[in-house]
Every structure is written in structure tokens, then in C-alpha cells.
Image (cartoon, rainbow, N blue to C red; front, side, top):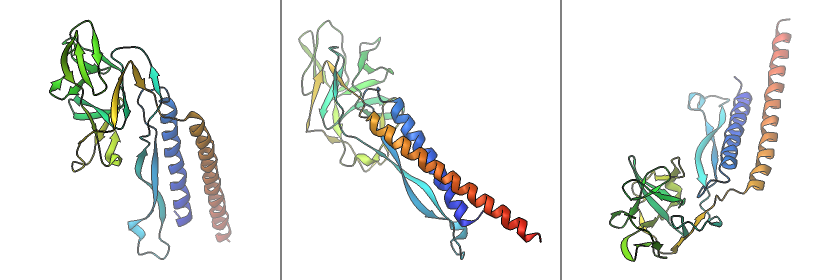
Length: 239
């Protein structure tokens, strides 16, 4: 494969990856607490031909950028719907370890613990939050009162470097860098009766999708043109 074709093909693949990311964002435009993301690409020099006179350069996925900007709040009126206003994440204890989320649509499991819709426990400062009563009041600092008695305090944490937080499914994020430890959230409040919406901007994603489709079409046309030229050169070479 020629150097030019190698670059063009990798460029087309990059656009396919970008389209998949846009499609995922659009599919989660109504998912509570969802944060839009997009792939980050870089130009890479192939190690196999690094000493060649015509080295191949291709496009590769470098990382994924997550937009952690806050989204509007949806007023639900449910006493178990919570939103972090400001900076911070709810901590969710899962079989795979702690996860972090902005999705505050919670419920109560059979053991009367506050859990996510997936059944994972919401962490409190002293462990799981027990919610066994009729009246549930959650203060701005996350303190939980059940029938007038304090039952616990919902843990809210933040990170100095959010770029290490990677999507882990179910609206969760996992911390991919051990040195990027949890820090105590300070610039936040917990709002009861509301949850954070998705921060996907549908119109922006649609515009980017159109631009990406056009870029993909351009790459495929270049690839076809190179293929046709190669075929003609081979045909001429037979004479």
C-alpha cells in the first residue's frame, strides 16, 4: 500500500470512529447525567517503515475527551432524585470498585439502601445510606434525614484532573490514574427533587455529523482515485 493510500484509509477510519462517537452522544441526549465525549486523534509515523525514504503516516486515536460541563436540572419532584449543583460526583460502590456519576436518579433496594437504577449502592460518609421510613429529606450538604432522624450523609467527591475519568457504562466514570485521587468536593450543593440532564447539544452534534460524513466521503473519493491511478499505471506497465 502506498504512503498516500495508507494515510487516506486511516483518515477514513478516523471519520468512522468520530461518527460512532457522535451517534453515541445523540443516543444519550436524554440520558440523565450523561457527558458528551469525542475522540482525539494524532498523526503517527509507522514504526515498520520509520527508516524508509517514504514513511507511512497514519491517523490514530489518541484519547477521548469528555465534556464535564454541567447540564440543566430536570425538576422531577421525586424525593430520591438528586443533583450535584456545581462541581463533584456521587460515589457508587460496584463489584468493580468505586465509580463516579452525575446521574442522581436513585431508588431503594430490598435492604433499604439508597442505590442507582442498576442496583449499585450510593456511598455515604459512613458507608451505605439506609433509607427506611416514610419521610426523606436530603439537605444541601448531602445529609439524609429519614422521619426526622439523620441516616447518613451522601459522599460527593471531585478530582483535580478530570481527564483521567473514563466512561465505564451505565453513566459511570472510573478513575484510570491511581495518583489522581479523590479530593473533597467544596464548590457544590445537593438538590433534592431534581436530576441533571445530559449535556449533549443535539444541534451541535448534528452539524458535526454532517461535516464528518462529508470528510469521510472525501477520503473515500481520494482512495478510489488512487486505486484507479494505480490500475492505469499497472496497465501501462504491461506494454
